[in-house]
Image (cartoon, rainbow, N blue to C red; front, side):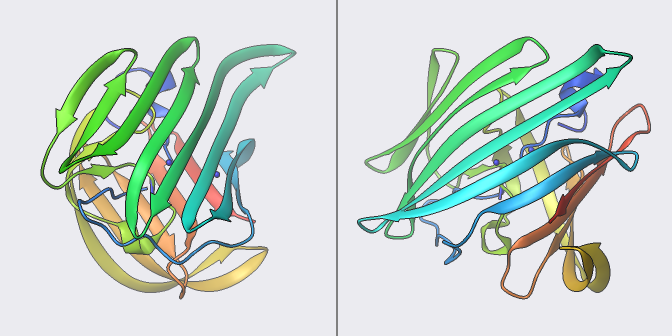
Length: 222
């Protein structure tokens, strides 16, 4: 593909945004032991593929670097009606997030977001506007089950902030990774509505949500 996708926004461009996307920057927080091969998701709109979400993992002297990239577009007859691009890098050290830096082009609306861990707090900057965040903090990077959290959720892709809760719905058989696989279903509700399915190792396998226009979007693990 950032735990960590905006479902309640009024226009389609914002509704398409994910943010794979995770959910957690709790201070302190345990970083998942998921440094591995790339995680790649097909992005589907009402069953039709419109893009790709990719996460790359790299260990560098004890630091876990997670690179996230999302590309989506909706076209018809050589005309592009919508495009969305997002890149970010998360860096984890000794189980705590050190920094996050990303850029989003949401159909022409550009966001530059950074989150930096300082002594006892985080500093979050969106398009040049900085704020200090103290206490429990979470961001919408959903690639690991271990990072799920509830409460106030800061977007890694825009200036949005959401209040969310989570419910575990149990294990189900889903289509992902080229076949059927058992996955744990987790539901996020509130100002962000997401259905998430995680594998036995806590890795994200599938994400689904609906827009205000009634369209269904899915991220399905290859």
